[in-house]
Picture: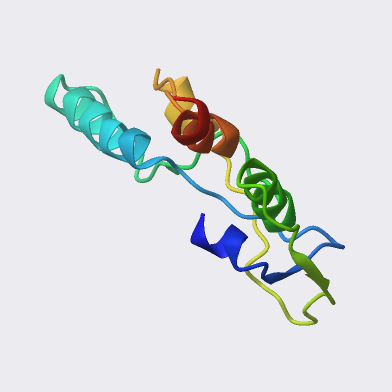
Length: 115
């Protein structure tokens, strides 16, 4: 939230996607996988613990700024060699039965504003 208050310069086009997970979901995912393992469920080598909404950073910070009644971020030019623009897919974790308490950034941050 501090970043939104600072009116940062953020790439808008093309969208710079980010992945996040609420701290409560992060802990719950670890407990969920530990429980499955303890019960003898065969687990995959890895699971991506990221919420259901890989959203563009500009969108996330703009939404936070709006909630905080701050100015929107400044649009900056796209980075040329940006390799961090990935959208993680948590489907393997959900197929195992995990249900996110906070499936999007709006759910997690929204609780702080409207909780």
